[in-house]
Image (tube, rainbow, N blue to C red; front, side):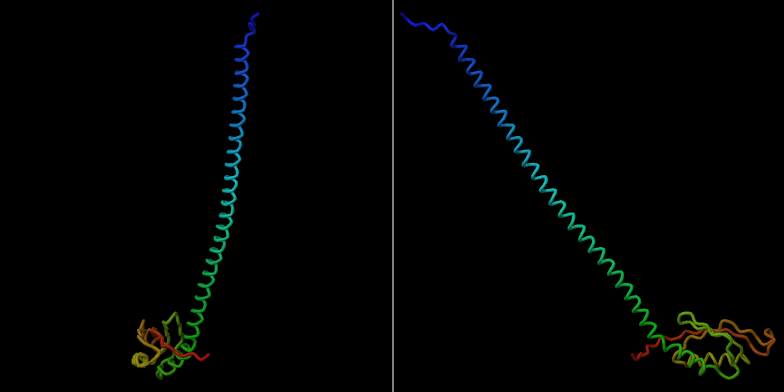
Amino acid sequence: MARINLLPWREAERKERQKEFGLMVLAGALLSAFVVFGIHLLIQSQIEAQNQRNAYLQREIDAVEKQIREIRDLDKTKQNLLARMNIIQELQGSRPQIVHLFDEIVTTLPDGVYLDQVNQKGNTVTFEGQAQSNARVSSMMRNIDDSEWLENPALVFIESKEKTGTGYSHFQLTVKQSSQTVEVEE
């Protein structure tokens, strides 16, 4: 007798193919999940590495900025010290000028002229005093013109003997103290 298979083999084969297809889809989904997870881990590691590089650069930038601040502070200190040194050198250079000033006052002051006040602001010296006559004040101005340490005498005012009531003329005179260089022995 002939053998006839009456079982639904096509349905079994279809179920088998559907089962294989489901397994293939599951395998593909798992494989794609592993690939996505691997890419995620790779990107995370690159982000972490970049963050570490950024942190390193920020630490170096902070260190350089600190050095720049220190350099600026040192520059300020240097400028202050240089300014102080210049002031000290100017004072050292002008120290003998007061001696020369008083020496010149004595040598330029003629008889009959008396000083009440001597004021100095910078290199301008103001003499205020009394004189027996206007001619004596003129003589003092000529002596100042001949002086090495005083120059440019200018008479501010002179009051006559009659106005003062003292028998002397009251005067005010300004002069410039010349800035001659003097060798300072150290």
